[in-house]
Length: 310
Ligand code: PSU
Ligand code: MN
Image (cartoon, rainbow, N blue to C red; front, side, top):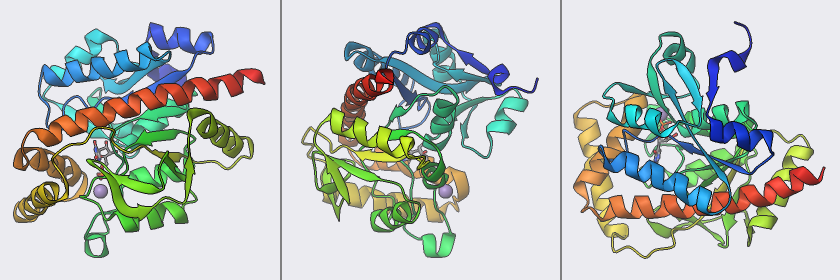
């Protein structure tokens, strides 16, 4: 085996989508994290796929199952992954390990971008990306999601970054890497549960078509790399700053006390924040991911039109 296609399983729906040049939206298999347990996690994942479908695009939920890279998990495969206790957080670095050892993995945003690029999928919807951690001056902890955005040609539709990060430094790093950060119908960079992080975005678009044109222009011009499309949460949740900030402080304290570092820290913080805040943050999280799946479908459709005009 020396061809990367040998490592991939593409499900029927996605294969049809590719064959007939349909718009496709990648989703990531966050089935075991995000503070959600079986069966809530799978219901949520299937619901996101439904939103993409209902809005005219094909969903492709990415993951790794028993060493096979899945470009689009089937419902059955999702069920297995959702129930499994041994699913590894998989990024660029450990894809070869998880695959060669025949293990199962849920893909980070970075890894989901990589799998999307394998299949030529250009739009990916998620909650939030990783970034520069708050104490990065000491920990050097900067998410590999940012490096991936510097090289891999996928537009990531998200709600900005979680406040576990230093949002200002994250935006600086994205600037250094030449990653367009686009506000969708906003001048403010959102902060997950809140519509604004207090930071401005360097550019904005006001409809899916403008966004698609920017994507096509970037990649036509061989300006390789990803795009962050920052879509503010549409619902108003009471879990506002104070609440969230308190949960984050507690979570950071717990991480420090337990000596959590490296790849464990982001999932740990997310889990703790969900625990420490009232269930509202879980609801907000689900709500914003739905917003992003919907917008991603609309953008994928517009991008697809431009591509098919060629
Ligand atoms: N931030 C979120 N939700 C997430 C993640 C980050 O608000 O689910 C996950 C994503 O999979 C992201 C990863 O790619 O954490 C980043 O981890 P790290 O900080 O270790 O790079
Ligand atoms: Mn990290």
